[in-house]
Length: 229
Image (tube, rainbow, N blue to C red; front, side, top):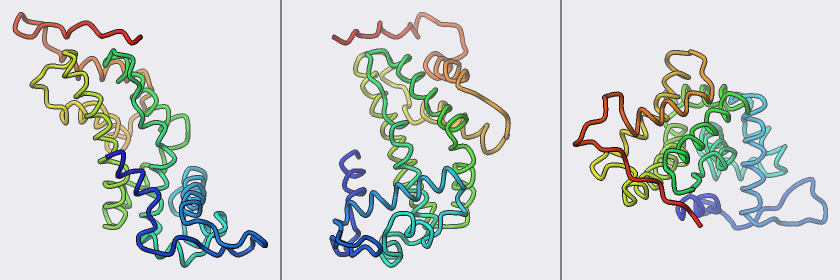
């Protein structure tokens, strides 16, 4: 999955591998990968600052110093561009720490995600992207392929490691755990429209890992977290 993400970031979808950039005398043609990074950076900055409606091919091309024609070739719609730009901007939030303690790592990652939404400007853009995706199939596809599915896979990867180490039950449904954690945040954000902050992370993780029923002999506590050297 990570290899796919990296290749997707460098892909030019079959277009020329360089671009003649206007307004940059003496620079000539830039490599396609450099242009793509500039476009995604500009689009992400506009998205977080001014919202999804401000992400137009005209404005992004101007701020990125790229050709508008290039944007039309690489993305089927401004919404698809906005979705990929959101993923690029939020990538640091997607990484999972590995301290050897899955509970601590999930709390750290989920807390960072909530801060990203609530304190770092992503809340409104996420609401706009998810809402617009219901009517824009290109945006819906981009959101799923460049953000939602890679995010789930990163979570599953960390939970699979915890399963192998005995910190998560071997029969646990990892997709359900992912739904319980991040799905709860999206539900509060998009459906209930109720306030929440990063203090929710510990409660969500403990319920997902240990449940709400009293511990029984046939459901012992997970093994002690390993210590990393």
